[in-house]
Structure formats: C-alpha cells, structure tokens
Image 1 (cartoon, rainbow, N blue to C red):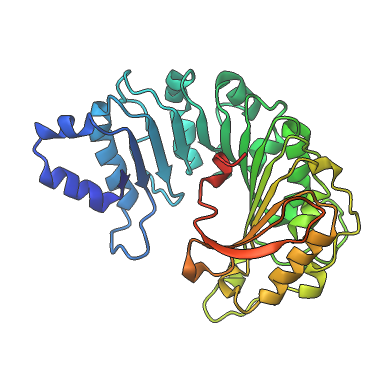
Image 2 (cartoon, rainbow, N blue to C red):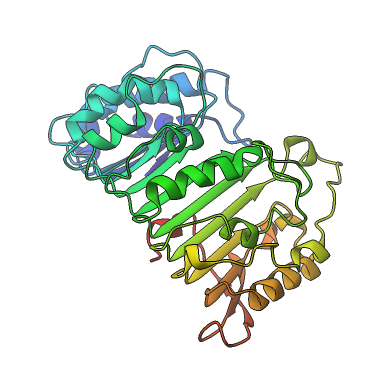
Length: 354
C-alpha cells in the first residue's frame, strides 16, 4: 500500500473508527510519501498531515513487515519517533527512511526489530544532525541486514561489512573514487550486487582527491578498473546530471562518443573477475535516441576490453519507461548481440540479481 495525505484522507473518510483497526490489521507493507508529488495541489503541511495520520493508525498494524518513508522535504512535526506506537507483534523485515532527522529519532525503537530486519535504507546525508549511532555500531546491532541502501558517509565511516550482500550507495559524483575505494575496502569480499547512484554527473567535471581529469571517466568501464570486488556479480550505475543541466530550456553538454568508445588507460579488470551483468542509466538517458552513437561506442569499448561481463544493459529514454537496450554474449570471447526488453531492470533489481 502506497500512501500520501490524499490516500490517508480517503482512508479515514471511508472507514468508521470501528473499522479502521480491522483494515489496518491486514496490512503487511506500506509506503508513505512525505514529499508531495508535483501533480498534487496540497498545502505545505503535507508531511505533517501524513505523519499525524500515521501516528493514529500505526498502533493497529499488528502484522506490518515492510515500511518506507520517502521524501526529504519534511517540515517540523511533533512526530519524532516513527515506530514508537507500533504494536510488538509488528516485526519489520524492511525499513526505509529517506529523511535523516526522522530516522535518527526512530533508531531506538528500530532496535525492537533488530532480529528480523533484513533490508534497510537510511543515513542518506539529508541533514546536518549527528546520528545517535555510528555506521559500525548499526551493522553490529542489526547483524541480519543483508540488503543495505545508504549515503556515502555511511560507507566512508564504516569499518566492517556485517552481513551485507546487496549494497546501494547514493553519492556525489565529485567524490566517486573516494567512495568507491571505501566500498571495495569494506565490502569487497562480501557484496554480490552493487548499485551506485551518482548525483551531479557531467563528463569533464574534475573529481576530488587530486585525481586528474580523464576522458570518459563517467563510463562504468573506468569505474570497474578501480573496483576490487571478486564476489561482485551485478553492477548497476544510475546517474543524474547537475541540477543546472536539468532545468527546462537548458541544453547540457553532449556526451562524447569518442571518449566513451575508448577503454580506460588501465584495462585491468581482475578486481571484478566474476562480474556477469553491467547496467547503466546515464545522465543523458532522456535524450538516448539522440545519442545512440554514444551507447554503441560504450558497448563496443566493453566488448574490446577484458571486462568479463556477459550482459550489458542501458536505459536510453525515460519516456519509454521500462524499456532497456540489452546486449548479451555467451562469454567474453564472443561479440555482443543487441535486443530491447521490457522491465529488464526494475528499481529493486539490485536486491535480487546475483
């Protein structure tokens, strides 16, 4: 069940107080959107409305197993602990909270679910508050978490992999290599599926830490030469451009097919020797039809390199959501063959594809 304030208003309008507990008793999974969708004409107090309704109904969610709070533009609210009144029979297996302030206020109550929690998303660097629990302490206490979706500071401050097998990291492009070093240093021998969400990507922006500007550094091939993750089977890269490049009427720089067609200076892929599938949604995906030559150049470079993948996928047009171009081959000694496929990569594919 996905819920915004509109859904909650319908819920309470169409159910009597006596019927609400009976309805809530059946809910196993719920997602609440704290930031209003752009098409909703709602007041600025949207998040307050949702959270107050949540506080009212959560006490009756006896069989809740999955819970997600999406959105980071949450206004000041009296609801601090999202899990405070959940009944003890609710045993969360999955919990996601994109707003750090709300997450930090709920961590103590989340400890009631440490034996059952397996899928966690949080610590997304969305606020300035200091977390009441360090990343290392979190994985110590929640030792059964095998699917982890976090911000880059969680990874750079981590010192052990816990039980994590599937990892998603949301990071700023300019810190990419620094974060990637932390990823393989901590999770290199355990993680089998990895998704990197790189924000603010434009080829030509210099990276931090003194790395020189390199042609084609947005290419996942460049990234693969910096990974030492022998257990990795699936790698997914999702890029978004700089905010100013996404404004309506702004034409961002074109991707460079020539640089994407060149394998990186280092062609050493021993660190990803078991990588089977590589998926990439570039920042120019909306104009994918215009940049078909860039996609072809990238796949050709992957074919000519020693990258061991048997499957490459690219999402090239947001308007045909769900359509991915896919290139496959029996093994690395054969050329790639292209075909289109619906639903090849879903938003949670990184959690399941090994």
